[in-house]
Image (tube, rainbow, N blue to C red):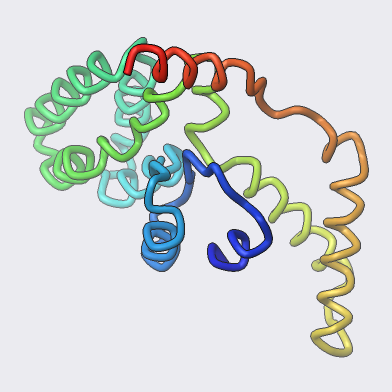
Length: 187
């Protein structure tokens, strides 16, 4: 997929947001070696909850949220260390290990302009699009062949790209351009 996109002219990729799918990570590292990787915080939380007792999930969710509510990467790292220590004191060793081992890859968004943080912490945009496609294909139920399913998906993608949803600006790139300009002047 990455080679396909690069072959179609995609360039200047600075950040990839994903759910830690190993195949995607390998492909991205090969095709866009300069891009940083941000693990989707929602997927990270789900992975942490998978080793957390059900009775403690709400408390752990608040603790994880506190990590990602910090004003800087340094503060988030400090909060993460405190959360890991608290989890260990609560006898949640597996949960603490999962947080300790993976939290750093969920903090990459802090290297980008603050105004973009809430938009680049997760892969919600693609998840929303996938839900829309699933909703449409579920209505049909069964397809006569693969081409008819592909036609429906492509029609839906074309509709999304041509409507208000597809035209809506997700981020103001002037913030990123200013940050890049500051870095080039300083360096």
